Length: 278
Image (cartoon, rainbow, N blue to C red; front, side, top):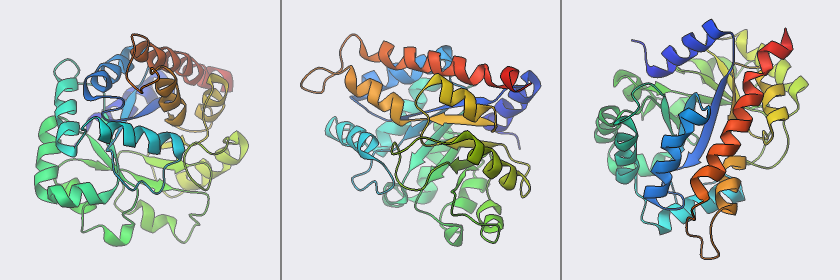
């Protein structure tokens, strides 16, 4: 069964370029603005969109993404409303892959089977759940695959060759390589080190490898995209969104454009990568 994610990577491979993957928090700064931003992303150059599921205890997230989650929760965002947002996006766009990213707790409370059925029906294509290791695959990963969703796994610089097969065993869609150890938004990715890491992962899997954490500029996006099948940008977009808000943290007339314009410039970087590598 081919998902939208598989189809998108096949299409990009034909074009000979890497994917540009964007991350934003659902409901930040409010549900309506959040949907408007996400609707603007494909036109701005996003190939795949990751949507964060706001959670009260986001241990792997840096300060920017934590703050985004808190803004979203304060604006009344819930997992149910996140799925409604996906449905809203799908009314006009049936092609762009959407991946929900976050923690297991909200899904567990929602009910795994109900969540998977509702997510699939809403138009979700994949899940990245950062706190579920391969040892817990029966909890969500295997049911998700059965429901027709990709379960995307994180690999990190500390994932050694002994550990990789377990990480990759039930992974589908793509592998998300976290280029630096630590929390999101902390440091800058080194494209040489990333290139070696991607090559190592590719010895274990045929799946595309996307790299995230530490990409903030078109130049960095271009360098990483030259070494990987995709570049993921989150914190920089969340920061651009935050900087567009008024003093009370509400959206302004600039908010949607602030994110879309940055996405457009980063997308140029990603799209220039393969040509530069040749």
